[in-house]
Length: 125
Ligand SMILES: [Zn+2]
Image (tube, rainbow, N blue to C red):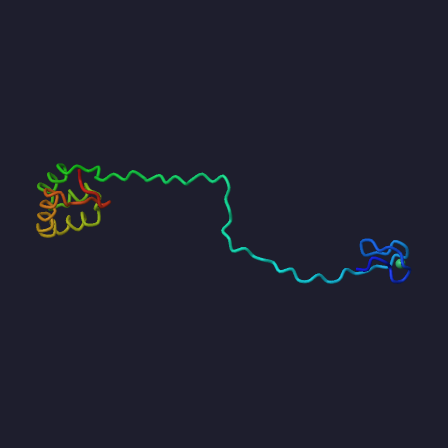
């Protein structure tokens, strides 16, 4: 953009001659090299994230003793499996007499040695 009008010699301000009003277009600006910063955005005032670890009970709320007694007396009915929430296999035991006694016996041993788990995978207390 010239400083002076090439038609009348008047001052050019803002691309327009102050005297004759001739407009001068601003020369096309060179394409701005936009630099996209590949930087992670900065977060201000972000408190360090506190991770609350949920207190997962290590043991089932079901009693080992109760399960053992149910298994011993009513294992062929799947009572201990109903008790520990394993409804699916409990019904199976109900119709197969505790997997023909074998399942109930295995469960009873597992309860005694403490490796029997409830439906949530938790060891009985
Ligand atoms: Zn002019």
